[in-house]
Length: 125
Image (cartoon, rainbow, N blue to C red; front, side):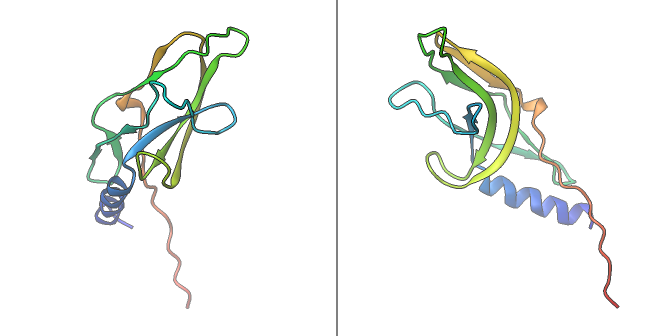
């Protein structure tokens, strides 16, 4: 497979992966009804080999739990095709960060890459 194909995959993926969400240590999206947390819309830069990188840092507002024994936790991110609900297309787990008081979590754009790897194609003869 060549870069033309991978660029096509990158372009199609950018059209589908429209929002980034944060998850807790159980892999569940943060769900703080009527709080400051929301999924973040994302725009992607697409390199010629199809690699995707967000065009800007993604900054999330995280509500604090108010309870030092039970802080709210951020443990990863997932990519979705909608602002709410939608399909979870996967993401990455990250080092857990705890929030007792309100704060922000930043996913740096230069640390997120979606890269398509070349695969072998074997003819069946």
